[in-house]
Image (cartoon, rainbow, N blue to C red):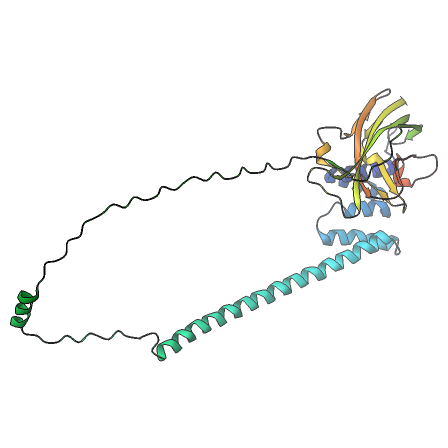
Length: 335
């Protein structure tokens, strides 16, 4: 009798969430379908499934399923409210467009009426003649005409063409165009304190999906703050922070699918924020998603959008979907 191995549902759900956050919607959706076949009442799986659809009706079906399981689920209630708000907004736009078309049509008809009315009034008052009057030609005898010509004929004037030189246009040099600005990161105007390198270790971590254990050492080498990154700008009151890190897998097992989604930041209001991808970092330091064998070293950077003021914690949370429990994540105060 063969022993069959089935992956851990929690681990597959974590991988599905990572895939969706990385933009691999199809892979994440397949894993969520696998989870829901085994646990149809898994609220977290239904919430992640709602992010796999662009169609609002399908999103609404996912939220309704969550509310059947947990009627007070805040995320599902917010999703339903957003759906109905979007429907009202769409109806309002259609009515507004229809009203605009009616107004434009009435405006055109009014303009035509005014033009033709003006022409009619001017014609009736004689300002614009309806028909040209034929000139009256006096009847004159042929002999009289001939005699008048003989007696009064004068030599026709001669015209001499004269050449008037034309002025050649002068060329006025135009000012050169100002070169378009390149993607330059602009640092914040508010100076920050000198950053101190921080190193912390977590482990051993048990990977139930692959039945292995590992420990990870995280070092923050530098932190940078930017009000603008290329053509990307944060929301009003926010700024970008770029955290430069070094990761060492101390083993004994491998770390699979390690990347930016393993990190978060927490602000002074205890709001957790996922990473914010900045294209300007793509070819410089951006942390790619990789597998880390025992002893492997990975260096790179991860960026976030955070408030300009207040406490900021940088967090490595391999168990982030289970909540931040003491001893199961690393926290670094970066501001």
